[in-house]
Image 1 (tube, rainbow, N blue to C red):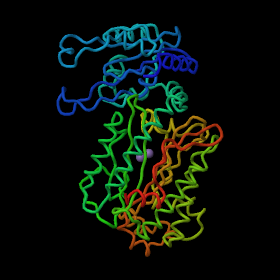
Image 2: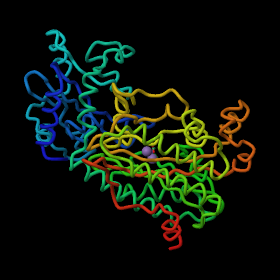
Image 3: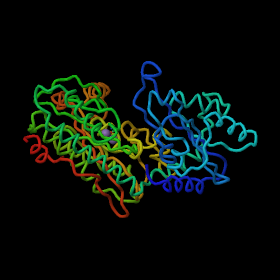
Image 4: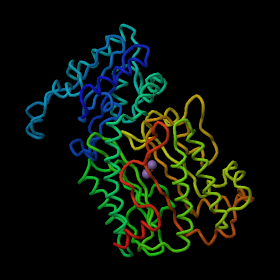
Length: 462
Ligand code: GLY
Ligand code: MN
Ligand code: MN
């Protein structure tokens, strides 16, 4: 955990941003895998972590916006728990680490909420994303679970986003150390990407490094020679020369800060001419987008910059044609680049998306497009110093999408469908880095992970 003063300061800053009432922040509970005592790896709620830092289940925090007090509700372990789990610190001791001096048994939470409701106080809560938390909040507040969404506090969401989206030095250090773990994950995957190896031999190794050097992966490993499927979690294919292997993976620190990196390499270690041609376009889109990052610029404009680089590259290869600006304005490039350039990252790999992506990536100035491709851009708003975000352009040859667009004669003035037929077996390429927005520019976080063709071929020949 950070020092207790860090959590106290965050709660005080939240008080400064809000008008009054009570903030209810339930932590997560254990989640059963197949029966109650066989649970998934425990993951604390990120907003609870941000304000209270305690990485244990069955807790709830209250931030009283009016009297300046904070409270943690939870239970001390009993002798049965000690037999199975060993001695645990008292709730009071755990709370002190978060700068909270007042604790109550968990059952008092209902009493406390009843009192607040009776007094007509505004109880701010975030919409839960887990079933057990949904049931808890519904019961605590006497609101049918179906209607919680209508009662969630947008004031609280906006205040939490305003705080969590700006990372301080301690948070940046955490994230950066996880990019360094990702360096080991990705360079290991590169060295293993040889003909005849089964994907899971590599994905297992990648996940093992995250477990050895950190708190595990920040999301399930995406590793596939079928990179045209954007989030491919199937790991049963045998690597074959001629295919590209996409590895999209990151680690999570003990304090739950994340990294999220993608590299794509040719099986066997040497790029063919065709792979080289596409790779250089994606690399240029990644590098030029990173170069353009600075405070004040719309991330949507950086997305469109990378889209133009991809469209121009595809035109140079002969797969697109016509005026590039018009092609991108029409959304024709999205046949090859059907997702957004990136997202915020922090305590969540897609930071705060549980609030609803538009609360994080968009604001009063800019709203989400409904055009295919651009509609999947999770972050469009103006960048500010302290944002940590991903830059992850890609080019994919998705046979079903190519066939659908071809049949519907979509964007025929910009796409060379006849030439495209020969590329339908290519797969996909994505290159992703994690970037900090600094006061006048940006900084690539962590030890640079090989991404030029020369660097990748060099490491794969080791
Ligand atoms: N790891 C999923 C993504 O890159 O957004
Ligand atoms: Mn990723
Ligand atoms: Mn990402």
